[in-house]
Image 1 (cartoon, rainbow, N blue to C red):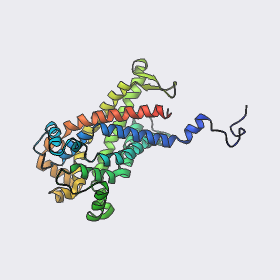
Image 2 (image 1 turned 90 degrees about the vertical axis):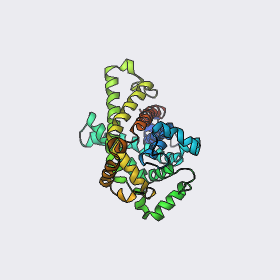
Image 3 (image 1 turned 60 degrees about the horizontal axis):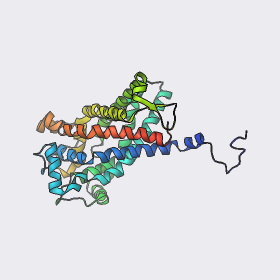
Image 4 (image 1 turned 30 degrees about the vertical axis):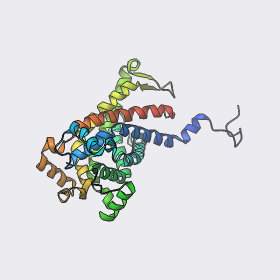
Length: 320
């Protein structure tokens, strides 16, 4: 039988070889789509979370569900999606980098360090989260500034204007990375435990009850994958555990990102300073964990959709 080379320069690559050639690109696309689907699902809750975390003076006296009702009355229903355009611009590369980096880090850790099992998931997840955050942080900064604005009090006219204003008024490029340290410190446990929990639940489920919880992959019948509803459940549990561990650092990050927008910005210049200030002024429940109930409602479906979409995209794009 003739080899691929003998078939001539115009011959198509064998399917397996072609798939390998574009593996990184397909993995990038799968992660980006997963991230966009997840964030679009919970965009209104994310807007409310930012308003509550930073004690916006229009809504600081309200709770989660009261704010969800108050925002459409004051700003219209599209007010719940304020900052979502910037979020999508950020979240596609964020999700793409995070999921792709996780797969690559997992292989490197296993091959170079000889670490496998559950530990390499935790390490790879933490490293992937940090990589994605650093690469997309300026976009997150702009999104938060836009989401914090209330109708009639706009400081920024759009994404490009926000970029220009932050660059010119807040110290150039360094202004885009305000609050990066608590973000990185918070992302390490969040992403780590998120990937660790999902991967562990997936492997245990397929090992202990393959017929009940699993099914053959659409692109490779030899590979077992979780059923869709099981994927959603495992992703939701992973999101809940990861968010509980890292939430105080998320509050710290948001306040530092908002910076000059807040009247008490001079008291929130460093991560430790911000943590102390929020704790002293508002305590644990109303300060460091303010909005956590909303975050559970937001992050559980978000992570469930993210992991489930990624698993489906892996099959659709032949990544198994």
